Picture: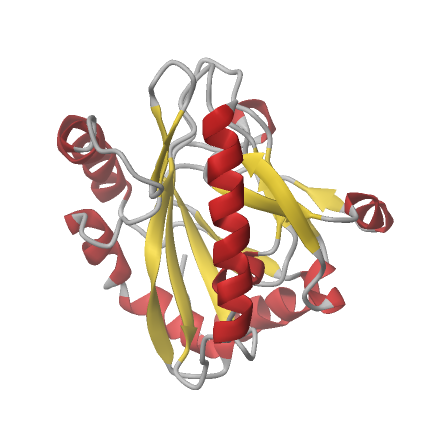
Length: 250
Ligand SMILES: O=C(O)CCC(=O)C(=O)O
């Protein structure tokens, strides 16, 4: 796909309207396959015995999510994609600042759900200029717990959240029924495609009960002019601590 200015402006319009877009064929498929192999055969193996709040496992001890992927060489490589950087800056209407990288590995049969949420409830970015680039390391769709979105939900601003007690996704919307007003969509995407979503759009994913893994690597950017609201961050950290303590007891 060619991402000329006209195409990018069209994507921006869609992003502003819906809160997310799908960008296909940004990466070389071969690179994504190599990255996926490196993840399984090297990076995740090294984390096997890692303990701490930044990694979450299923009940049978398979890694479900990793919240510090910045050091993985493939995160660095994929993050360097010039087209992605240009699109991100245009969508944010600002220069971009790196805001970390995560893995949602969602293994076959046992992959955990992510309750519906807005990323900015976790991030606490004061001006809400933030986005996530969700890169599909496997095909992702309704059958294997693909990410769902509520179209236009970013227009609601930051919504109230409550503790979810789900490992790796501690927060969820306090009033989920409010989303019934909106259209729910699960983009059907192929390995190497990506979804770019606004940090205020409501999204989540169901369990993966299929025979196929559904690995998504996220790269996140905020605006250069953005600051972290430290009071809100403090509240969130307390909620997270409570959630982890309670989860550890069950
Ligand atoms: O990959 C998933 O299942 C959830 C992703 C997510 O919540 C996010 O990228 O913020």
